[in-house]
Amino acid sequence: MILVTGGTGLVGGHLLYRFRESGIPTRALYRDLKSIDKTRAIFNSYGAEKEALVDDIEWIQGDVLEIPSLEQAMNGVTQVYHCAAIVDGAPFWQMKKVNITGTSNVINTAQAYQVKKLCYVSSIATLGDPVGQRAINEEDFFNLDAKNSNYAISKYGGEMEAWRATQEGMNVVIVNPGVIIGEGNWESGSGKLFSQTYKQQPFYTNGSSGFVDVRDVTKVMIQLMNSDIVNERFIIVQSSIHYKEVLSKISHSLKKKAPRILVPKWMLYIISAIMKIGQWIGFKRGLERTTVQSLTSHSKYDGSKITKFVDFNYTPIDKSILRVSDYYLKAIK
Image 1 (spheres, one colour):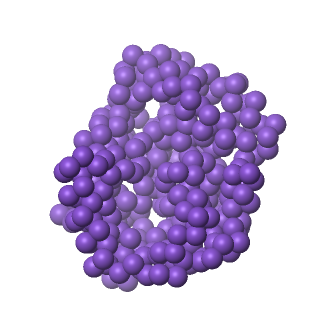
Image 2 (tube, one colour; image 1 turned 135 degrees about the vertical axis):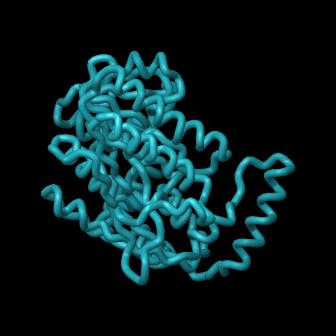
């Protein structure tokens, strides 16, 4: 039996599809029945007839912060894919609670139930800056003295829990994906790239990051878990691309106008300050100064290590964008 946390999210949903399509017994956590609709939408992206496979999953109502539900979910499990995380827009305390404490709970329960192997989904946000002009690789460690985003700090804390488990004798593999392109929730995460581009928002920022197809991420995770590889982490990035270029590719595939107005860094800082004041008077979401830095920095990532460990080739990001755009246009009809 395989357990997937975060099964109603982007990575977890696509991972569940791979298992159910192969007929592998799978268990997943969910908070409420409505959240399972997100997984149905992901299964639908593989074909309308695939939605029914969602009902073959053994769903356990619970949460990574609720140990009794984790104990129920972990019983009889041999592999755990820990995908659950808060990725954006939440208060820092909530990110820390889910991304760090929740990961600790999952690992501790897995150890208690003698799970054979665990895959932890980390992020490129937990990587440090390289020396010189080379691309960032797995040997570039998180800089605690740098100005890191709340998300990066929380995911780093979660990754440290995974490394702690390796020191305690657990078999663990860690993946650090870049910005994940895939069919999922169009109103959060990378899904917004498609919904906002379709609405023809005209703005872009002067920055770049690493991008990868969700199907590549899930394929690699399964390959690693079914191998003898343990106690390693892998950057999963197909290519590092300028944000404007990515948005232009999405615009072209959606047959919409490409963004044409550059939002300068100084203006983003002003917006960040205004939104900070908004948070003080009750608005929930803000724009962190560290997020501004991320949106305007040019980071390059070396995702080649994984190709030396497993038989795997990345999907070109242009092909990924075309596929996801095509499904988005069908989904909104």
